[in-house]
Amino acid sequence: MSELAHEMEQRLRQQLKPAFVQVLDESWQHEGHAGANGTGFGTHFRVRIAASALDGLGRVARHRLVYDALAEFINHRGVHALVIELA
Image (tube, rainbow, N blue to C red):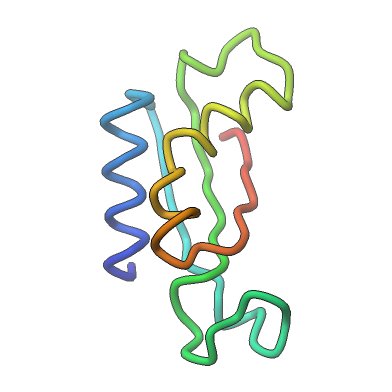
């Protein structure tokens, strides 16, 4: 796990208290695409999460909670894309 993925996972644990969370750095799969930084790390992530905070919410609301929890990483740390999957 990359350091940035680890930090993102910790932030999700703090903010959403998930029963399960996994953050995967898939940046290497997006080399040459928009937002890629040429290193193969730190730009494109997959988040798998199960949290009671997301229960009963629509898809957009669930995604908004995850994006809000990770706003620092998106706005200031180079994260370009997230794929969010409910586990």
